[in-house]
Length: 192
Image: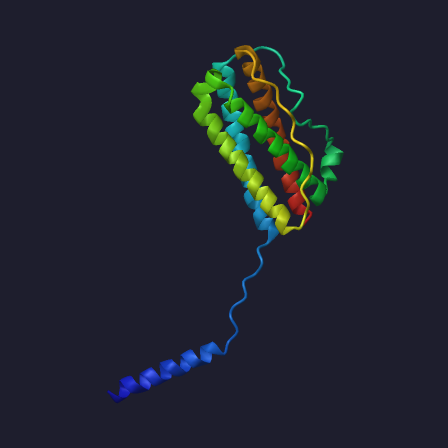
């Protein structure tokens, strides 16, 4: 019994000694780790978009180039991309991805035209929304302001053919944009 008492006294003294130690500090998260997660999400979204675009083209074939004036325009040269800055680059990415998010919502409301692809379009929209939220969270951690570009006003859905053309334009543009965005995110990450 005496050994048990001495053991308890020793354990209690250890506990008392531990109380005097400062609590371990949690390191603030490294924004580069957040960037890695965002880059991975953007690359996965690029792959999903590419797959959906090919599926869309095979289900709704339409020759020619299709455009929507309300989609973001990529006009950055390789030199401009190399010189992209953290605040402006992230603000632009966030604003453009929100624009694509609004276009996907619009396309999902097109009615029976795209109903067969609704699960895939819905999943793509959810992943895009997650990317936008992660990007905005990172921007708030870095104390960067969001772009205040107004979102475009989208036209009424129109005919079946108009919706198909809009789908071709949207998926093609989003595919190209995400390819650019993944590259831009890597360059921005390297500047931290």
